[in-house]
Every structure is written in structure tokens, then in C-alpha cells.
Image (tube, rainbow, N blue to C red; front, side):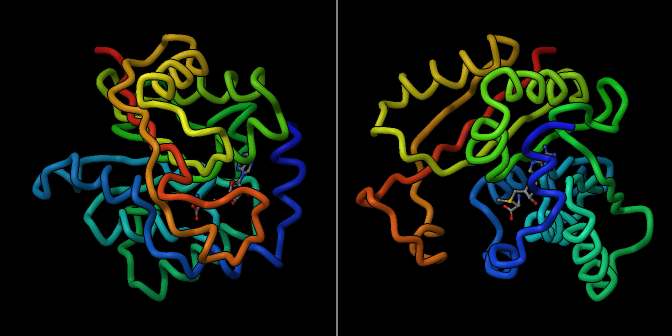
Length: 216
Ligand SMILES: C[S@@+](CC[C@H](N)C(=O)[O-])C[C@H]1O[C@@H](n2cnc3c(N)ncnc32)[C@H](O)[C@@H]1O
């Protein structure tokens, strides 16, 4: 088991009740906008490291089929309860306990898009290093259909880099396997939202949004 999964499967009760209340991420709103409304019922999106499912529920409301994956059974139970309350039709949501660094429990080239919000950057890189991150990214690549969309959003305390530098950084992490469409600094409000006491000044751009395609 990866170090990140080992840590996160134990639940972090002081943290998740807060994250659960956040609005949908910027990445998920971007992702939804990339697909036409009339096509969405035929599209499967993976929410990798879904947590309590703020983005999964948004995708379901927007008409997608979703596979929600997380190391924490506790988080998945909360998501299932919320999907019942939201009266999501059976068959539109699948939930699986998974260690994303070891294996994504999906066959090759099966999904239209994969969403990664606050997983790759703050967690997998932190606990499993570049080697672990690359194992995870190889799995992301494997499960996406050719032309499939990969979106990753994560906060960063990196010094402010230009778009070009961020693109290079992300291309290096994915070892050139994806076409990187964009890798941009974005403004997110979660550091304020969570009330974190950061030693760094939180400026306009506190996160990265990376958008990549699996080549056809
Ligand atoms: C910071 S939370 C983000 C949750 C959600 N994406 C959101 O934005 O609300 C990170 C999530 O990734 C999960 N996670 C961390 N490492 C993982 C791994 N190796 N495999 C599967 N899930 C993992 C954690 O259990 C947690 O739910």
C-alpha cells in the first residue's frame, strides 16, 4: 500500500467536515463545461480521491456518470449517503475503495475524463514522492480513453512560476505522456476558507490547474 493511502484510509476527522462544505472546485466546473449537455449521460468521469464527494455530486447533478475512488471507506460512505439523499439514480454512481498509486480499479481506455482535486500535489507527491506520483499518473493515462481529459487542481506554496514554467513542471511530472493543454496558477479561496495560518503570504494565485489530454 502507498504511504498516502495508508495515512488517508485512517480518516482525518478534523479535516473532512470542513472540506465537505466547500463549493465544487474550479477544475470540476471547467471539466463539466468541456462536454455538451446532451452527451453527458454517455460520459464517465472518475473522481480520483473524491473525499466526501463535493465534486462527484456536482458531476452527477450535471448529468455525468461517475466513478468515485478513495482510500477512505469512511469518505465513500458519506458520499453514498449524500447521493441517496440527492436521489441519484442507481447505476450513475460507482464507488470503490482504491489506492490510486498502486492501481486504479478500472480497465484500459475506459473513461472520458479523470478529475484530481487536491490529491496529486499535496498528498501523493508529499507522501509517495515523484516515483509514487509517476506510478499514479501512469494509471491515470491507462484508464483514459484516447483523447480523454485529465484535470488536476492543487494548492502550491511554490514560488510563483510563469505559465510556461508550470507547463514544463507538469510535463516533467507526466514524463511527456500527455499533451498538456494548460498548467496555470489559479486563484482559490480554500486557504482562507480553511483558516490556515500559512507562513507564506497567500496571494491571488495559490494553486495550479493543469489540463491535459491523452493523445489519440
Ligand atoms: C484533500 S482530500 C480532497 C478530496 C476531494 N477531491 C475534494 O477536493 O474535496 C484528498 C483525498 O484523497 C484521498 N487519497 C489520498 N491518497 C490516496 C491514495 N493513495 N489513493 C486513494 N485515495 C487517496 C484521501 O482519502 C482524501 O479523500
